[in-house]
Amino acid sequence: MRRASRFAWRGIMGRIRKLTKRLPALIVDILRLCYQVTHGRTTIGTVVNKIRYISDRQKNSLIKFVPPVFNITISDQCNMRCPNCYHLLIDENRFFHSYIEVDKFREVLYRYRKQHAGEVVFLSGGEPLMHPKFTELVEICLRYGMLPRLSTNGILVSRFLDVLCKLDIINVSLDSYDYESFKRYRGGTMKQFEEVQNSLSMLKNRGIHFTVSFVISKENISELGKMLDFAMSFEPDAVHFLNIEPHEDARFDTLIRQDAESMQHIEKVLDRNDFSMNIYFSHIFDIDSAAFRETKCMQPWTNLCFNSTGDMSLCCKLPPSAEVGNIFQGDDSNSQAMIKFRTEIVHGNFPDGCIFCHRRFPLDDYFATFDSKRREWTVKPMASVEGELIEQVRRVMTTENTQASTVPVNIERRQAL
Image (cartoon, rainbow, N blue to C red; front, side, top):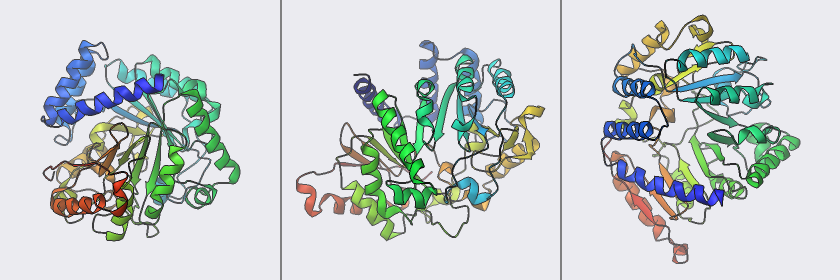
């Protein structure tokens, strides 16, 4: 019953979101804040901070607000070595044996919550569940009124079921659908794969809401159907497909709209409507569009990122460094390195490794989404390829096997950013 009501509520909220998309983004943000205040879900101080964030983001290099999202690497240790891990693509020695101290964690949250700032805490890693006092960190987040969220590889989930039910979001990063693919894409053992399966089953049986995600690239795009069928057997709330961020690593190719072969594999998924969970495809790049050339990243305004030793990073995907600042030593989002980085972004300049990062685009700028209640795909083309995509969807809807299960597809036209 709890799961059914949760899905029904999400369906209602999905329709509300579609209506609000017709309004200017600033108006939507203000309406959302008003709702949160009137329903006791936030404080006036938090609203003031959020308004400053909304008005300053992507405009001012020196910010007068606290980023609403804290991305904290609570464990710099990991029990896997995934070949496509964005951390290891940048630095093969990225992981080391270190956990954030509980007192340091509490001190940072207290410092900002007394300013009524900060809303979400992503407990990240490495593998965050390897932290020996993970449960205590979650309780601290809740005590300070911040929403704890988690992304995990799933191996240790079964040990933390009693605390995981208190989290706002739990995502299990899979990237595989059987042992052979687990060994290939995650570098794991049979025992680890069995642990992941057991964890997913326990989340399902306990009625704990969770999502799963897969990193997709040209190298594994042909396996989309197998990924979805595997995920569906565990009844997650949603599946997220994340376009790989190769960081110029020649072993992996990010997905682009101009790659006809990759798009054909995605068409096969768009031809199905038998999924029991919502599906989200992250941004797939149209390298010929103005949006690809001009879209500026929002992450340095949205996120405050630091690792277990306090070293800060410019965003959630770039490596932490003492040169950026150290949160334990009094630095904040206005360190000299952060100001310089924001200045570069305002002027349209950013590192080459950021070009093919899907997080450079708005969070709701999905290539395609599937609504499991309405059994409907929504595809959001970029302006330069809209005609091509409409023709592509026509082909999907007129394939020979659509007589039994025609897939409705909405095309939402929008201007290039």
